[in-house]
Structure formats: structure tokens, C-alpha cells
Length: 179
Image (cartoon, rainbow, N blue to C red; front, side, top):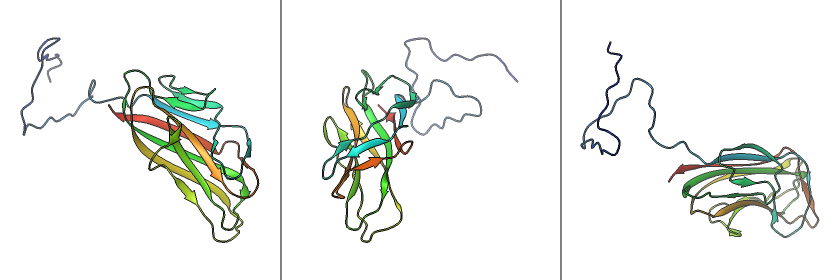
């Protein structure tokens, strides 16, 4: 029934909560935890043509859906960790090519970190028969990043020719989980 504000300490004080104490909240919590920023989401709204055979090709994005810290650069198609925002990041990435699956061909989507394949980000499809199904790849990864590290999405295929990546089927998003 009390509607007053209770202040504990003043600016610059440290308030210690001893081990074994439970903090319960039945109201609105403010100032706790992280806001999970930077956060971004981009997509390719146009068709990306001529993804070459037997090479990793950078996936292009031309539309920002969200970019809290202006950390995604559409001109380079890369996310760069801003100053003061190092930490653990989670990324999701996907795309679909315009051809149906071909037998014994390899299709991959990966993340590159600072120009090299980032460990643990390979998503691969290797159909054993020719199918009448689309080649849609998606993946997610959690990476520890430092300030100025940059992340890009690359696509690989070995169909003996080039393929196109479909419009509105190329997505890339990410956010900082913790510092």
C-alpha cells in the first residue's frame, strides 16, 4: 500500500547482496541485465545472380529490417562489432537458391569472421538423388567477438554451373547476448 520510492545507497555506492538471498520481483524491473544490443536483421530483397561453381561467394543484403547500433554496413554486407560492444553474439542466417536439388552436389552456407571461415558455422546439404525440392539452408552460431571483428555470410555450391540466390529468401540477423 506504500507508494513511496525506497532508495538504497546513493550514486557511486556498491550494494552487496549476500549469497543465499533471493531477489523476488512482482513489479516492473528496470536497469537489470543487458538490452541485447547491438542487434540487427537484414535481408536480400532482390535476386543475387551468378553464384559461381566451386567457390565461396559472399551473400548480398540490400535491406535493413533492424540495426540498433548502425553496425551492419549494407555497402560491404557485413556486421562489425562497435566500440565497447565486445562479447558473445548469436547469429541466424539462411538462403535459398533458384535451382532444384541436384544429385551428389554440395550446397553450403557459412559465416566468415574477419575474412576466414568461422569455426562451427558450416551448414551443408548433400542430396544423394536429384529431387524436386528447393535447396534452402539455414544455420545459427554463437561466437565470441572483439571490437572491430566483422561477420559475413558466404554460400558455396558445386553444381557445375552458377546458381542464383532468391529474392526475399536471404536473411541474416544477430545480437549480443552478453559482454
